[in-house]
Image (spheres, rainbow over the protein chains, first blue to last red):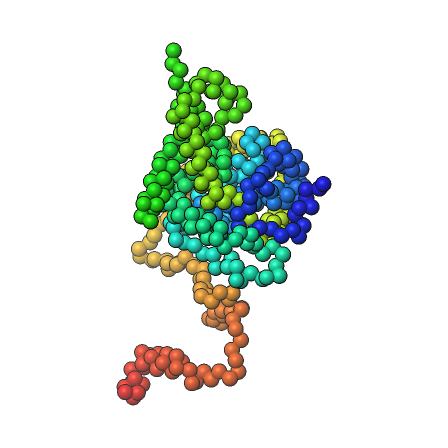
Length: 220
Length: 200
């Protein structure tokens, strides 16, 4: 089966919402093959790589900056920069780790430019479900029951609020380790720091996060 | 004999970061006790809680447009593998700075060799002082307007040609222009005080 066919298929995408992790498990060998083709100039292979990784990259960036529209733009830039830098990619790291590294730079560049706190800066107006054409093939789907969605949303909001209070470095290390599931070595590559630094940041970040969430539970 | 595992390895084990031979070696050398196992389980629960609440994968809105826009952005320049550095480039890397430095030294030397002819000024019969000719510049504040000037010493006139100025409508009556009246009165008052007195 040609994997490139996924790009143009009209399958409904669970867009603008979480995707089951099991469905999106990526085989690094497939990535390596697609990267080799893309390095030779095959744009369809690169398009497939975009399709395979856009969900994780977008989620990582969105969870970092909490701005849907900005995350969309930064994710675009990540893949464009990845294409431009593809000739220099040597597969020393996994392709996904390399993308996280570009995303890390993109987020920090954006933060430096904007110099704003990400807390409470949500601007989801343009992705409002009510404004999306009901006939759109790629309109966001809502597979959860209202109760599940509410419970999930409540927990998510609490954790997101706690995450937002962390420093960007602490937030990023928690997201990379506990949400994205990267190994310590990979996180060190992404954040360009030592494994010791990653461990230290993760220890303190978890400690702060657990304290904040504990306080909220007591307050209820 | 120190049977305590390295702090780094222990932290990695607690986070399920060890795999294959590393994991086997760790568990062979350090038999995790109940406390360590409980600690590892606690971290697993923590990660599961976070992972359940914070999605690791979120499809961006309008995913097909997302891909399309990237494809459009990268379509023109295709990635090219880095090519070997040509010999001329290597030659230029040392030749150009050396040439530039030699040129600067030569220019400095020529400057020191140039001697101005002595100027003799006769106080009794002074020559008229020639003011250095200045090239006038015409400032055009409006964007898109170009100006050229022509000077005719014979006609004692200077003409400025403006290009790009909006056409003046035929309906515009200059005599009714407030600015025109104001400027004319002011000019008249300055040039001819008698008129100013009449106007008052």
